[in-house]
Amino acid sequence: MSRVAVVFPYFRTRSATEMLFPPLGAATLAAQLRRLGIDTRVFDCTFGTFEELRTDLAAYRPDIVGVYSMVSLTANTLRVAEMVRTSLPQALLVAGGPLPSVFPARYTQHFDAVFRGEADVSFPRFCRDFFAHGASPLRMGDLPLDTYGGLFVPNHGLHVDNATVHHGVSELATFPLPDRSDFDHAAYQKEWLQKTGSKATSIIVTLGCPYGCDFCSKPIFGSVVRRRSLDAVFEEIAQIRRLGYDSLWIADDTFTLNELYLAEFCRRIAGLRMSWSCLSRANGISEATVRLMKESGCRRVYLGLESGSPATLELMNKQVSVEQGIRAADLYRRAGIEVAAFFIVGYPGETVASIEETFTLALSLPLDEISFNVPMPLPGSKLFERLGEPDEGKDWTRENEITFVFPSDIDESWLRRRIDETMGAFAEKK
Ligand code: B12
Image (tube, rainbow, N blue to C red; front, side, top):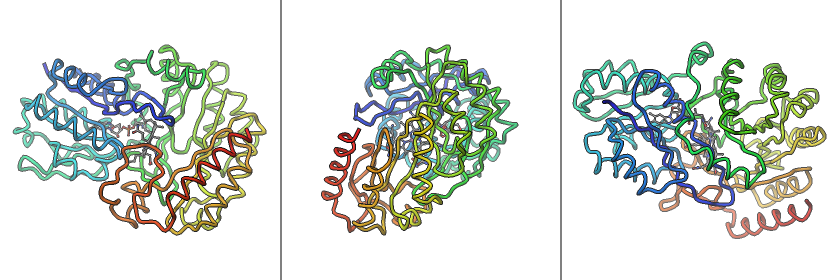
């Protein structure tokens, strides 16, 4: 029997800012693999331990082990790879996800192959063909390797470097819904109930983002926006409700971009008794749409306001003004939707004065939650290209850490103190 394991190597940290969601990429691949009749299991490490993963993987005896990776999971990914090489030496080891998509060659030092970008079709087809050709890494060359989008293999005497693909809307409509059957939903729901009083889970409705923020990288969905068929989306929402969730966390980069589509989504979700939240931008949203969002159950929006300084917004290529941010926060709050805002402080090129403008803005707005981060030069972003590799010894393992991973004129301890003071003043104001 041919078996594929898909590993999500996140072990919960219990940090205050931790948000737990079942990994949608793994669920997406599981659905596609099972559709091809391949025995598949997702190993979501969120609530487990490394030792449990070792035991469970060994018991399953997969022929292919696929591991998801992103910037904050690098160390875990490599540890899993090492463990698989020792305990399952025959297995083909494959990586995918945001960071392998940007740095495939780094991963193929430890993995047999990398799939970059959207792997919905390419990875499952590759697995099927791999099994059909005897399931041996040594016989990979017998496969039609140039037909798998995003595949990168510089090992085993092969040189494969295929372009990534972005699936079009009509193709997306033929995809099965993500298969969420391998997750510990009771544990996820308990966590959310304790923190927020509702049971939320993530969903992707639209793919891609047309903006070019300096600090952002778009390694998977890229810049071309694709809106899924709402029939499929609402089938998925029905599945999510059957699993016991009562709230959606829409993970799209730009869910509020198209007002017509958004309005139709609102009309269809209204009456389902399902609250929802999403990321939004400060521009391009009308009062009528905001009212519709509220009426349909939108509880909270997350706005990347980033800065109170026009010059810094320019540096970030954010393409919104401070005034648009103020207007958006006000619009949502007046409609009765909670607003959470993200800010970035200490951007390369910033001064103490411009950072203070951000603290002042954060305290002047009608916000329900604020957070401050120092810029994280994400591989694949323009910021990363400018700054180069981060300082040796500093990594991104911890989320939301106030530490510069690049040389900065801004005094880190001053910045930490000002963030603490601003957070304190915000809590008092509330
Ligand atoms: C939802 C989300 C979160 C959620 C939940 C994550 C989770 N449990 O799934 C939360 C809010 C917790 C989160 C936190 C963070 N996130 Co986040 N997040 C996202 C977001 C918006 C969507 C991810 C998603 O669900 N995609 C939908 C699924 C279907 O896509 P996918 O997972 O990419 O899977 C596809 C491919 O990657 C591939 N694939 C996936 N797995 C595998 C496995 C194998 C073997 C193969 C072959 C292929 C493959 O195939 C899939 C189908 O096409 C993305 C942005 C984006 N649009 O991708 C950022 C993103 C992944 N996050 C990012 C970052 C930086 C973070 C944080 C570090 C932010 C911070 N400062 O704290 C933290 C880290 C937290 C942690 N746990 O380690 C970056 C990663 C950048 C990078 N180069 O690595 C992204 C790309 C956003 C960005 N533009 O900067 N995040």
